[in-house]
Length: 88
Image 1 (cartoon, rainbow, N blue to C red):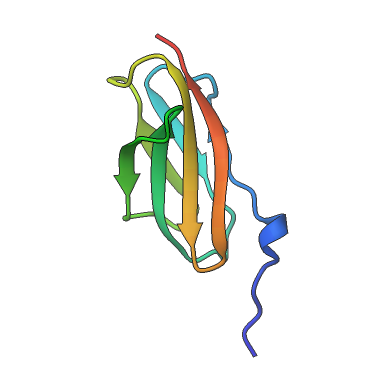
Image 2 (spheres, rainbow, N blue to C red):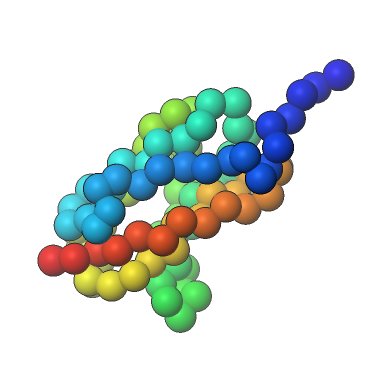
């Protein structure tokens, strides 16, 4: 049988946060993730990445306006979201 991590135990890290240029996204191992989606406070999608590495990815926010964003990881086990602050 396949073992699947409990979705409630899934977390990912964004750093630095607040960010000014590039954000590192540290993923836990063993998760099958389909995409990363970034939305602004209105819920509008402002970025998407479907080419995720297994443990660490980066997100360029240098051209993004200052503000609060929500970074979501989506996969077969569900969707997880963390808040990201961009300051210039």
